[in-house]
Image 1 (cartoon, one colour):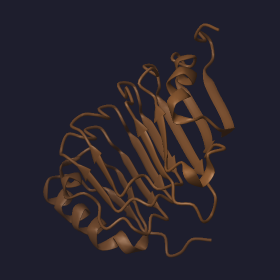
Image 2: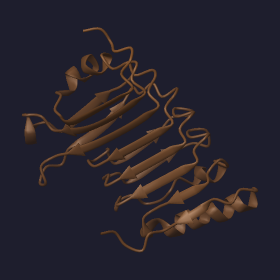
Image 3: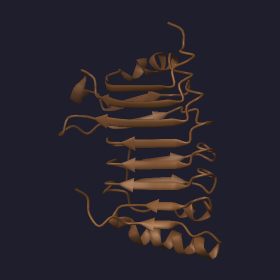
Length: 195
């Protein structure tokens, strides 16, 4: 089956792909601008410690939401790699252990405007001044292990909204105050609790 020329949004729930086949699957969606998928660990279950989505063929992708589900007592590492993010403006990552550290390269997400990290087991996010040069809205929701917002976010002067977990308030306020000194005044949202 050739890649779709007209499909605008692809929504897939309960996507179960052994990681070595994911590249072949996503090749069929290379022209899709919006992708939403819920990924489950495959029949390998507890024996398979990594699920890797190879998304480098999705050159027209503008919005990506990935939700990861696994057994409650299973620690799985979930990675989105080789993402050709030239056009990506929205990225939502939901669930799973995104490795302990996420290292974002310079201008890897050069057009990203909205980034949400939700219920990830990530402990550290490393990003340079140029990793998210056009980011406007940054959300961290229920990421209990994340220690701080990268200090480099001070230099993302396109930021309009910083919305983070209460335990990140000090880090977020520091970035907000330093951005004010640079002429930007992002709105800071700290929810009091989650339901």
